[in-house]
Image (cartoon, rainbow over all chains, first blue to last red; front, top):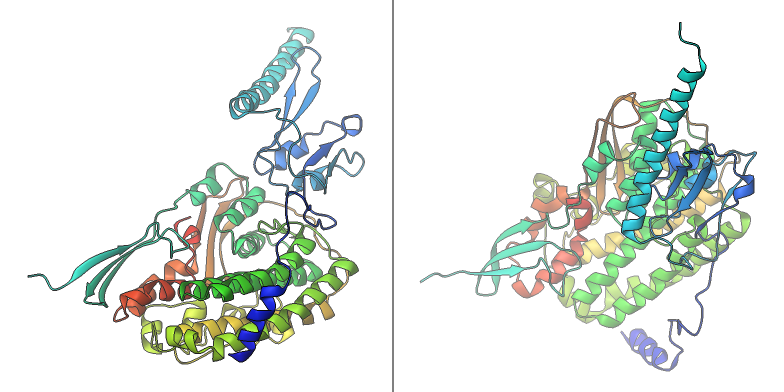
Length: 143
Length: 361
């Protein structure tokens, strides 16, 4: 009881345990989990990251003419689990995790835009598949 | 004239942490009847696990069932899924899982202790416990990269390795914590005003606890030595010499003491796990898809967490059933509240450490 009283008195004059946050930045641990960074030249377009991402924060759309993929990332959906980084093939290493930033710097997607993009990602891949099929049947001579 | 009066407590109430609703039937100040409603935060996690997410992703989904025992849920799911797939796990990964699980138990228990102190009107002890809890949060952050949602366990092993720096940091933080928890324990034991609020309040006898299927610290405070860590070798607890903690009084004080002593036990387990950490890989290559049925029990901070899985070789599971400790303990809670003073109800409820987001899923 007396010890507690003594502690209380001591605490009255000691510095606060909390940080003066906006003016003092909070300490960061090495290897803290943040945003996923994408290095496009390294990508081999295997789409493994899209497949494993639990919340579906990575989507690829495909161009209907050149068949080229485009990478899209929604930082608001991302849970920073880095499953995509582990799924990325060893040869490519196109994805990495940023340990400084967990907050998106720009505002690229609002919800509706992302929903439209999710649909586009599925539709475009489906469309390209159809196109390729059609082309193949055109090329092979009919018996 | 009616002799009793009905007083609702919750679902939103300043003394409650979680959206649970109790309806008390009181005779003067004494509670004679209790009704509980626990379904306020239903999110449909079980269905989502079988329809929207593939089996490799479900581990991350079930971690969102509960913020306090996130790693317990993902460990339990992963162990059950590994059993279905016949997946082998490296020994180092098992040890790392154990360390993460025990760190989680410490921070959950400290949060509960803080809130029981707050609900008994001891605000300063609440602040102090939360401040000391920061030590274990830092250790978790260093180990897993996040403070609350760890996403540390995946099928086949764990996601991150532990470096010597991190090991040193965990040891240092736990050393400090041991001292601080010792001081808190002294306060809980010897403080006169706390003993008025805690001793002899909200008693569950051993027989009642057994009949009403109390789990976790609730049962162990009543003298029932029931701990999944003792009964099943899901993680290498046996190799580290785990000893469960029991008390016999069954009141709030006994529950607090069980939690405090379990914090010490967890610290000891982590330290000896770090001492004997085996070398090797942290994750094995995952092969195949799950098939068949399996169930797994894991000791969560609040008691036994139970998972049932059914799968038929597809990417999606057929059924995921989650049974959480709070849900199992609701009848025992009702039993403990009967006969208590209405004014003691918030402190009694806080001492159960109910986790409603687990319960309602």
